[in-house]
Image 1 (cartoon, each protein chain N blue to C red):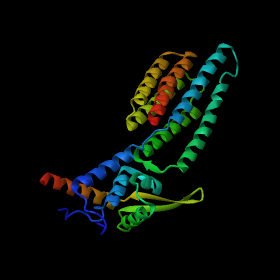
Image 2: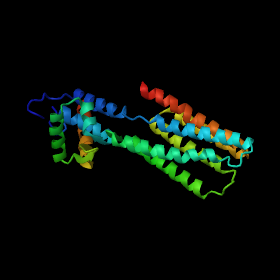
Image 3: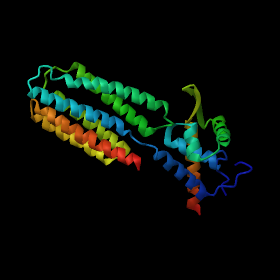
Image 4: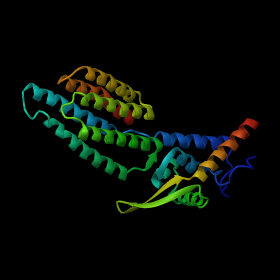
Amino acid sequence: MFKDLDPLLHSQLRLSIMSLLISVKEADFSFLKEKTAATAGNLSVQITKLAEADYITVKKTFKDNYPQTSCIITKKGIKAFEQYVETIQAYIKKN
Amino acid sequence: MEPNEKELTQEESLRIIHEMISAAKNDVKADAFIFLLWGWLVFIASIAQFILINMDVEWNSIPWMLMPLGGIITAIYVFRKAKHEKVKTHVSEFLKYTWIAFGAAMAIIMFFHQWGSSQILPIIMTLYGIGLFISGGALKFIPLILGGIFCWLCAIAAFKIDGIYQLLIIAAAVFGGYIVPGYLLQMNNKK
């Protein structure tokens, strides 16, 4: 079961991050942390993994002298997410 | 899949996707402050000019000096809010461009129209209607859609009526198009 699913997306936190980012234009780290209820450390690790796969772009800026990280889903990320949803739907239809 | 993570079932995957998309969607909130600010400023300016004209005051258009003040307050408010914004949604971006387009159209009309034209206020009300109707549709907030339609009806009435009574019509337009939906939006955001 689930052999064809993208292993990068088939994880609770990474799937949560991608689902949030597909719904918005841009989200900062605190928004993702609030919505996923994940720890900062874990969230940071998973964001890095998604960025390394080019599924998301991470922008680091400064706001009021504080560093700010914001994330945007890439075209590759959108395609991977759509593929993941299609695969899940195919499984549901089969069962 | 992480070594310490349990395998997600298809139902769990779908639930996560659904929950997160809903959570992001619920974050779309239009700001009632700007609707109320402009609603009250235009309402006060139009009623004040109507009274001043009836009192035969020469500089009766003075109350419209409130408009640049509104522009400054809006610019400061939007700038400060953008600094603390955690997320940019597609709807919020769409609304931003809609109202920038509205502002640009208003500026062109205000600077280049023929002074003393009786068409200016009905045209402004038509523009109000466009901004409100689009915002209401994007936010799925019926009072704003109705407010936009109300502004268009006021515009039709104002095209038919010349003179100072157009000022009362624009006051009614902003009351029904901005102030009432603005307070309803404020109540809705608090829910």
